[in-house]
Image 1: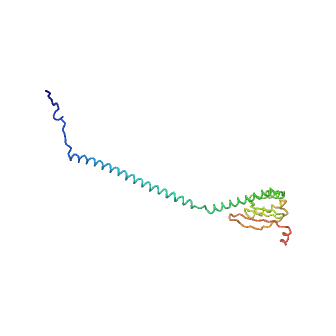
Image 2: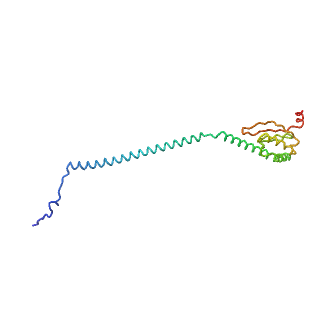
Length: 202
């Protein structure tokens, strides 16, 4: 006959405990508290991120508004009247120089040797403070249009006409003389026949 000997002491014996409503409530309460803490922390982090994004968006909008305002001011900015006047003067001088060069090229292509000789002599007697913007030759008639630094420079230049074989025997009358906006003396000279000069002297 088998016999069983219990070697467990009383304190080592397993004790069966029943799951009561109070214990279940306690466990659920602990889990609920942990869940509320997690939700609270998450909500706080979300609120902080939203506020930071709003601040960054406001800063970005301010920067964009400043850039837009700067672009509008730059687009509305107009150059000074002095710069505009200088620009117009340079454009006019460039246009006159191109027109003058074109006329010289046309004259050089022509078969008239007197025209080439006239241009060469005119270049030799023309100082730096006189520049021609237009000229024409039609038979004995010569027209010179240009600008001078002042009236004295124009008079000294006309005195040099006697050094040119083609201009020495011609008489020139000032057809037009006026001052430009930049302060230069604009002139238009035209040769007159000797008979016309004598009748004017009388």
